[in-house]
Image 1 (cartoon, rainbow, N blue to C red):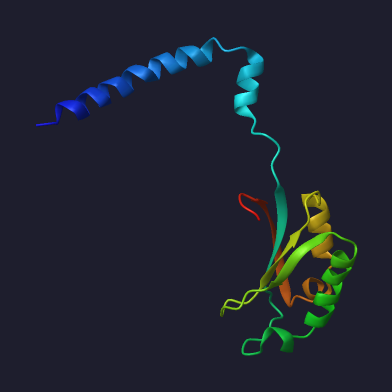
Image 2 (tube, rainbow, N blue to C red; image 1 turned 90 degrees about the horizontal axis):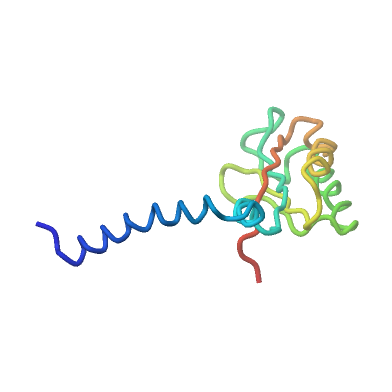
Length: 137
């Protein structure tokens, strides 16, 4: 046996759905387009690194051949104002990530990551993933 108040609320909720659908159907094309496309957002193309085929198990990140060159490569981006932050993950999985500043596109992030000496040598592999900055200070 259901609570009468809950039952009335559920019926009211079901009654609203067709009304909202009708309102959307008669909305202007501009209003529908504004609802469909979210406002401009801060999307970053984050470069994730993980151990590659030339990674030597049992050695720490900084004992791996080519990691100093990897750091130097990303320092170029930092010095050119294109890197917000980056660094290694501290868990057993290894790898790390680089977060570029707003405005660095996916193609640029992929080209730069592919030119990394540690990627070229196989010590690291990378992936670029879009990240929506949902919160910041």
